[in-house]
Structure formats: structure tokens, C-alpha cells
Amino acid sequence: MNEKIILLDIDGTLTEPGYNIPPASALDAIKKAQSNGHKVFLCTGRNLAMLRPLLQYNFDGYVASAGGYVVCDGNVVFDRPMKPEVFRLAMDVFGRNHVFRTVECLNGTYGDNGLEDLLEGADEFSNSELLRFRRQLSETLNIRPMSEYDGAPVYKIVFMCTERSQLDEPLELLKDYFVFCVQNLESLGCLNGEVFGLDFNKGIGIRRLCDYLDRDISDTIGFGDSMNDKEMFDAVGYSVCMENGHPEMKKIADYVCPSVSDDGLYKAFEKLGLI
Image (cartoon, rainbow, N blue to C red):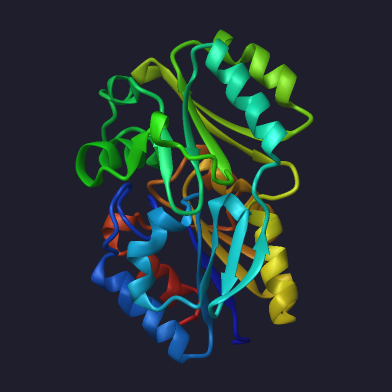
């Protein structure tokens, strides 16, 4: 088959949510695909700090921070943080509506006090982003207090709240500046989501990557599991959702492969003729 550009979400796709060690079968599949001439990139909402532990596995690059920061073969292809005035507007409206905020810069992540309590009910039935944050708070401690935020450029804001009404004003006031990705976790009594600028998302980041490589976007294959992978699925030539993924994502995917815990990536790479 033609050489492909393979794009892998991390949490819930390459790894169990919140972890940094892919299954051995996934690493084997990636290595074999690269030896066949395919290029393999991470495509993630994580910032550079959060994805850095995975760079030891020799990916060809990454589309990070929900598409706001793109690197190929060590070269920065695209770098688009939020405009400072728009970031301040978002922080203000979320704050006065008592919405918990986590801001992601390239090299640090900062969260409001009380986030741990809101995440207390997260379990294996929650979405992968919520689980990632709980595990990073309780195990890897990568999310630092908001009081330590030093004004560095921000690429993404993750939000969590208990009532839909808390998002009424943010949705109205920020609609001209941000894309909202909201997941309603009724069983946990909270809503979880993220906002990123209208001028970047995973799909835009992938297009920038293809332009840099002088490749047609029809030669891309995207693997994901969450609603924040939708822009990736919309952009790529072929989309694959994990069996453990969000029901809506499984509906729109070209193919649903076995779950991350069932050697899903390896089996999908085999089925698609990548290895």
C-alpha cells in the first residue's frame, strides 16, 4: 500500500487513560509500520510536558495541545497558542460561574483548587480525559496549583463543573473565540470538556503537517476514542475508533477496532495492511 501518515491519540487509544506506557503490541505495531515506510505521529490534546514521557518510543513527531503545536522530525511546523486577551476572557467567565479550570502551556499544566474532589468519582466507565486528569493528580502529580501559573502562553483550557447552567454564560460569551467540546457525565454528576481556539484544532494541525511533508491528506489514518478527536476524524483520509471509545465517535468512524486493552492498535494495523 502507499506510505501512510498514521496519527495516534494517546489516552484511551495508545495507552490506558492517564498512563504513559503503551502495550508491547502497540509498540511492536508502530515499529513495524515505520519499517514499512509509514510515518507515525502522536495526535493528542496533551501538551508537550504531558506527552514527553512517550517520546522515547521514536515517533516521527506529534500534533500536540489539540493541534496548537505541531512538530515533525524535530522541527516545529505550527505554533499557535491562545491570544492573551481571549485567554483572560475565558478564565474570567469560567471563574465567575464557578467552573473548575485547568490551563495547559507547553511545559506545564495548572489547575484550580478543589479539582481533586470533583474527580473523586472517576472510574473505568468515565471518558478518557477525565480519567487522565484524575490519575495525573493522584499518581504523577503533573497538574500544579493555579497559583503557580507564570503567564506562559496557553494552548487549551480544560473545564469541569457540576451543573449545565454553569456553562450558559461561557458558551454564549466565548462562542466567537473558541470551539467547545463538552461531555456530559451524568453518572458522575459533572460535565467535562475543553476549549481551544477557532484557528487551530487536531484537524488543522494534521493539515499543517501534511503541507509540511508535501503529502495529500487522503494518505492519513487517524486513531482516537474521545469527542476531542472529532476534528481529527473529520480531517483524515480514514478514521479508526477504539472499541472503548465514545459511542458518537464509533458512529462516525470508518472502522471500530478492539479496545486499547485488547491489542487494538496492533490488530487494526494488521487489518489495514500497515504491517
